[in-house]
Each structure stands twice: as structure tokens, then as C-alpha cells.
Image 1 (cartoon, one colour):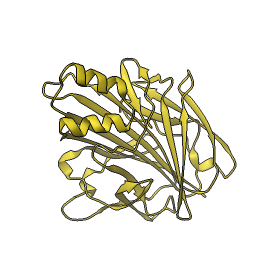
Image 2 (cartoon, one colour; image 1 turned 135 degrees about the vertical axis):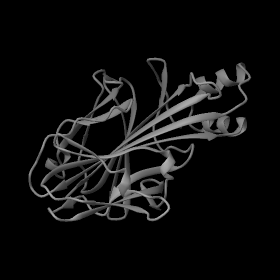
Image 3 (tube, one colour; image 1 turned 90 degrees about the vertical axis):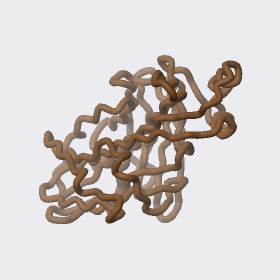
Image 4 (cartoon, one colour; image 1 turned 180 degrees about the vertical axis):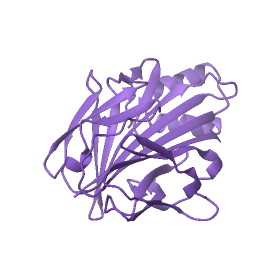
Length: 261
């Protein structure tokens, strides 16, 4: 059962994003040398396992890479009609951050959305819908995948996060972390610490997926430990009533993806 909590008038829930299916950005590897080409795939599935998928270009609102202070639009590297991955040449050492924003309007029947709310334990929203006879189920879903990978040995500070409503900020460069290290993240809602939010931390290592569910402290922070090497994803999502005509809800999902040796 998914637990919900009221934060600044918004209802939060943990990912998976079952409204339209799980999707995340994953590289062919997390550690490169200058001169390599990073091959980045959008994948879809459950429990951080899946297969390559396509997102139509019209749903991608932003695709960019940040290196140091440099921000570069790379939307031209992706064409849903021609290929399934983004091929990004990496020339200089340092920490790379690739950010992908997608926005999509989706429709659900009243029965389907009510069942979804029931499955996630969002009883307050379900009660409101039933008592106001809200029949349509139109949702605007926005997702932000923030991928970090390392080129060479030069360790740099975390690039400034994007302007997405939810941000997951690690306390330092994840590529300085090793197995057994304590780690910390801060969850921001429109730049402010978010208290009582459920955060999901996924690790994929040697064919197995483990999941931790942690709630944020008053300062928006969570603490955990690097239990294994492999791929890591930190995920947070929220749902809020929409003010746009014809829409009932707006959802926001953020995934922070990185690797550990």
C-alpha cells in the first residue's frame, strides 16, 4: 500500500509511475574515458528492469547535458523515428549530467483512475472524487530524468539542478562514493525542503534489484548507505489538483540515476 501525505496542498506518492508506465534514462556504462561515446537509452519496465523504448519527440520538452558551467541542448541527438538511443560524444574529463524532461497529457476512465488511487492508498483524493462526482480522468504527467555519469578521474561538484518542481540533491558527487559509504540526499519542492515525502531508492546489481523506502526529515533530507555497486536510482513523485481546464490532476516525477563501482 502506498502512503500519502499532505505537503503544501500537494499529495505525494512514491514511484513506480503506473499511470503510463515506468520510464528512465540509462547509459551503456557509468564510467567513460575522454573520446568515448556515451550511448543513452530510454527504458521502460518495472523494478528498474526493462527494455529500450521510444518516446515521441513531441513529448520531450527538454533534453540537455551539463558539464561544469556549460549547458548544451542535445535534442538534435534524439529521433524517435530513427533510433532507440542517444549517442553523446564525451571529450573532456569530469562529471556529466544529462537531463530529460517529458510532458504528456493522458486520459483514464473514471473507474481506472479510481482503482489507481485505491491501489496507491490515496484515500483523500478518492473520497474527494466520489463526493464531487468527478467523472473525467485527464492527467498532465511531467517526468524529469537526471542522469549522472563520470568521464575520466577528474571529480567535480554536482551541477546545479534544473528548474523542475521536484529536485533530488546529493550531498556530494556520487562518483566519490564506494560500497559501505553513508550517503545523503535533499528533496526540494520548488526550491524548498520537502518534509514527510516518501523517497524510493533502487539498486540494480548482478541481476537483482533492491528497494529502500525512506521518508524525508524536516530539512528535506534522507540518509542511506551504499550497500552494493551497480546502477542506482533515487525516485520521488507528487500529484496535485490541476488548475487547467479539462484536467483533473498533474503529476511530477523525478529520477536521479548514477552508478557505483
